[in-house]
Image (cartoon, rainbow, N blue to C red; front, side, top):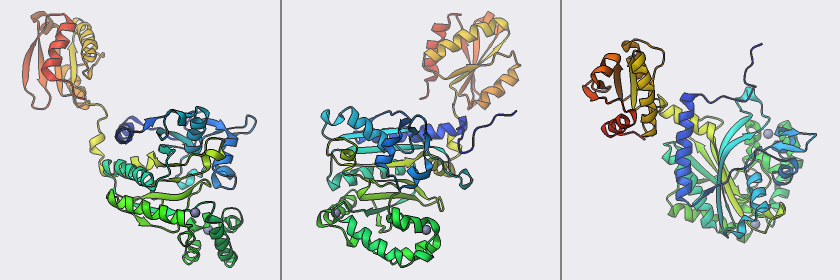
Length: 424
Ligand SMILES: [Zn+2]
Ligand SMILES: [Zn+2]
């Protein structure tokens, strides 16, 4: 029996993982510039946490979670709930009034793989807890914008407000009244959502539903004075930070906990599944989960989509995964014995070094050095060992120079490291 990876779960192979590392490096760098600290979270939580935060009537909780029914635990379908659980559990607000946290890792949802969805997918997640000023919303959005821009990915930003518990009920009521008039024309999902989660109808992908909601009431006409001025201030602040955006009054989120500012980054080159990241404010959620009455805002960027967009742009840059500083080509038993020790010391010196242990010909070994894209090859045969002089070949211009050997591998490695300078 041939064992394969299960559907919706994917291996990230060496050529591709370089791209993942590159994205993570840039993201971490930007997170740190903005004063964020990393928090690492478990992948499983009590099922109750997600039901209470994401919402019972959401697609995620209704049908997409991997739950171990007998244990009452669930693989996390998103990061915010876990992060807030940890924030509350460890009273992190006592350490610092405003907490800026990020986490990177896999999430799990029972999606339909035939639609190209993965059941294990990965996110870059960032949250600011303890600040409710609109300037904070703009700063967080600008940070996501900076990550995407530094990856060289073109996106457009859409923002909206979802109001608050004061102003949303009136909007919701009007929206339901509007939708009831078209019940028979809505898709089956939206017919169900009209009762349970009517805001979700606004971002149904069904073309017929889209047409129907085009004339629906807009939340922006229902915002209370506080929500209205908050939304305006976010826009002004984004303009000051030179972050372009458009207002999309149909944008809602699949999660119940969002209030006020919501936003989405749409990739220019991705087609229908075009959001690379999204987020929003969730004032009230921390208290609802048993924590202090602090507001919060966060976003998640989808790693798989970022990788896809990066690969469309620059494939060549990521191959080969590791460029060697030096390949030691050993010819003969004595030379191979000395070379192994030398390679070990070269690595201690911070050089990316390799050799072949198969006793192959010089030609075959140099070919291997080429496959690793080695900068230098050091050729040591038993004769060279006896003469105490190896040959150092610059693989770029094929220039060869003698490299004196004294059979003290540690000393030789220090000398060679000075000569060829490790790359980073
Ligand atoms: Zn409001
Ligand atoms: Zn629909």
